[in-house]
Image (tube, rainbow, N blue to C red; front, side, top):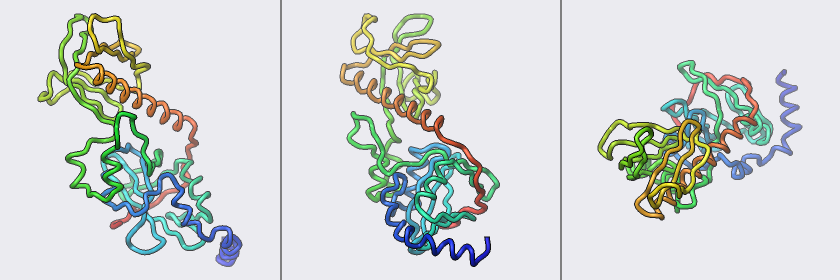
Length: 280
């Protein structure tokens, strides 16, 4: 496309595209003035490979940063609003709708090392949380301006829980107290709280049900149903058992929701972006 033709095309869309940047406030994964460090802490604590969010850049007006989690690091890329279009790499979008639709197709971008990053999971500005939690502390604190050093050592990741439960053995049906930790989609149990290595890790993506159980000769008992085995666990109180069930069910609902999104999302290799930002 020549310069004259491109200019005429841009001018023809000027009226309809004017003020598009104002509509970013309605974009679910736009985080406004979230800082670079806060974005990294959010994505590393609560996100997964391919999680991304859009935020303001401090370099100049109309410049934004797309922060993307890749493995155990976060990359940052420029997005510029010119007044009539959004520029990202070698791509130009004349409306916010075009820009958002482009990301809905999971484009690939490349880092400075040549590693390809698939944009899979928009990180929401508003995070759904389990009903038993008053807030998701990492997300909420980050959004209210606390720094990474303030937060990460003291606040858990999204939807975590830990504590002692009594577990029934697999082959030998004896009951033993174990230390359980729930992080992301993994439920691990250890010999005790001080033991560094887990006895076993249960992948909740394979779990089909979590419910109270009344078949055992113990109170406050619940079970997790897997294809290969049903695990029976008992808490000290009914309230504690109810908390475990609620958060495990919430985790499973999030897994199903994510699997549904992945299944319904088209994949495309629409563009490559050469260099991440060195700054914001």
